[in-house]
Image (cartoon, rainbow, N blue to C red; front, side):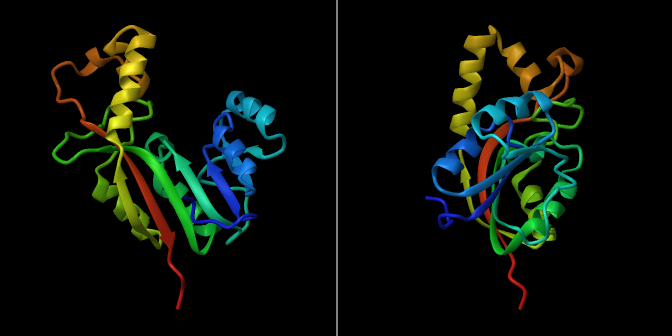
Length: 201
């Protein structure tokens, strides 16, 4: 269950085609989304007219302490400057507001994902690094859940849809696997973090 009352102001950071925005709207929340893809925003406009804006996650077009909660679904690992986005998220969250992140991360002992191109796994980092980034912005992780099985299920569906594991790697990493055929491949997990912005004394 979401930790928000009806009418809470929620930001979907990286809202894509607006699927989550539509669910938030149906649940009685005051939701707004931002994304940088004009194509996806056009789809979002069909679902939730007037609720999705074109904006950079590192420059949110919202006032300070204007949101009760922020959602980031598979966004931070795809951004070139995730810390800038987190700083903006911290700015727009009310004290005590919640940040809910679902994203790829590097599992313990996995090699880095550097050089993975521009796909959604390019910026994946270990769990402790992801949580340290949150803490630096005054956002404290409260709950972590590993949902790697969902990532495995998705990969299997993508293999069936795209025809090969090679094509799945292109989708996830933005590059041909052969460009680093001899190197160790990152072992990816999928996690959910529920975190809360600190309340000043």
